Length: 120
Image 1 (spheres, rainbow, N blue to C red):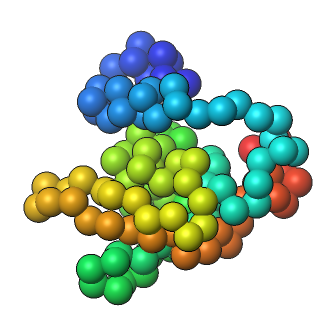
Image 2 (cartoon, rainbow, N blue to C red):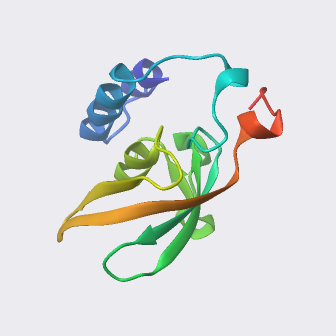
């Protein structure tokens, strides 16, 4: 996927590099072996901003399916890269232009692997 985005001239090359770095640290497992509390592609996740207490529900998607108005966050967006592979209860640092925000993963409302949707 990453090489295809590079070939197609994806504008956010820095974000692709961060995603590659995250993927390099991953352990590859069969879809059936993924724990239900891990954020994977197409997962619908409830996050909490630790400073403000505000919550956000979003779905982690491939770039072609991203839609900010529907809270469909691309995996190559900074937030998408930040949450990929983390678990319910984890707190992550999300770099924003105004500084780093801490987000806690409160719940996963849908995860394809847990639902048996291995084709997504």
